[in-house]
Amino acid sequence: MTDPGTDSPEPTAEAPDAPPTPDAPADAPAEAAARPTLQLRFHAVSDVGRVRRDNQDSGYAGPWLLAVCDGVGGAARGDIASSTAIGELRQLDEPPGSVDVIDRVNDGIHEAHIAIGAQVDHDPALNGTSTTATVALFDGNRLAVGHVGDSRAYLLRDGELSQLTNDHTFVQSLIDEGRITEAEARVHPHRNLILKALDGLHEVEPDLFALELVPGDRLFLCSDGACGVLDDARLTELLADGSPEFASIELVRASLDAGSSDNVTCVVADVIDPAASPATPDSPPPPPLQPMVVGAAADLGRRRPRALFRGHRSGDTGELEPIAAEIPEGIGGHVVREDPPLDPEALRYAPQAPPRYVWARRLLGAAVVLGIVWVALGTAYWWTQQKYYVGEDHGYVVIYRGVNVPGLSNVYEVSDLKLDQLRDSTQDQIRDGDMIFDSFARARDEVTRIGQNARVTPSESGTPTTPPTSPTSPTTPTTPATSSGAADLTGATPGG
Image (cartoon, rainbow, N blue to C red; front, side, top):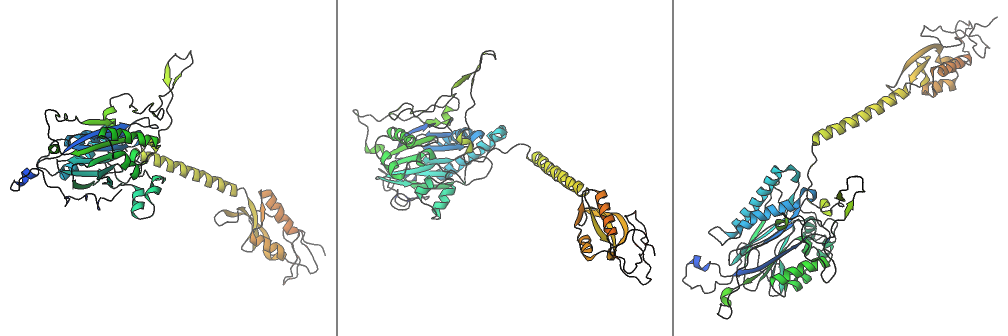
């Protein structure tokens, strides 16, 4: 494939190498030189393919207009988007007037965009549907091209194939940056991620350009079901021979044989000069071709799309009819059809319809999360209040309820046992809060045991006293006196 900027026509508003208008006198007015001198011989084919249940492609071919729209959206009915777009674009298929062809194409694409938005407004279930659009409008000399998405337009001139459009896809951006090759793009996991589409919601600016045509040119428009599986060499081979009808049919057949899992739509048109082969009594001119509408735009009123290549030379390539599953007798004797498997189109790259009641669902979810957190915190606090530990408060041994964490414990009972009456190891344990118990009774027993084992310390008075044998309710503790030589306090004043 050659680049349109090399040997093939430059896709700009005016091609510098435009051929002179045949039979136009040198002194003819400019408008006479611009009269249509060339014609299009065209054919269009669209096939649902071997995998899809529905054809979401739509195509159009007429004397002045060629167009391919690839609808996306899965459950949001991409076939509606593509057929709506073709319904608007086909109004461009009329002889050229005073308006420039590029402006007409731009207006047509925007009208299609607005029409899709009107469909979504009428039926909110279509929210999320969209379509690509590749449009080629002919005025008898020039071709104006408008493009959005990943459908493509090609030009075959003198045996060389040029891709006229540039894909609006994620992988194309990687190709443009030199990060992957064309071959790698064909198998990239995100090859179907498009960046532009007509959805009636997001404003989009199409790529617009024009080029001069010459007799012998062949135009080719297709959905990605064809160009996604056929490389440029294969496309050139299939476009090189035969009539537009033969070439379009073979292109669809070859795409299915190459393993395309998508709908396939191909539009082929030849540029001819009727003056080069004037009609004679022996060879009258061919009858004018009637416009062709294919794909979803033509199948929308039918019950099911038609697979064109069922049972051809490579075998049955059409989709299988759904199998009827009969309900056992006694339940009504009705015949129903099993639910089809998930259509891969539903997982395609178009944005899906947003769920309803988004804010209500978010608030409900937040309330559930907060409720779970509240219950968890309440349970944790309740658990901490079932614990007791022996600690110290203002120099006295006390019993705390809770765990030794700030804010999760409080003084439950104060004993009259002073901390400095205890052994050093016991003092360290009490300060660290290491004496933890599952009940208040066990904590109180431990304080009693500590009091019985408390060591005697000398005082200034020399009068021996001992702390109480068990903790009491909060009272004013009495400073114990000691007696030299006494090893432990027993809870009573020792005899002389």
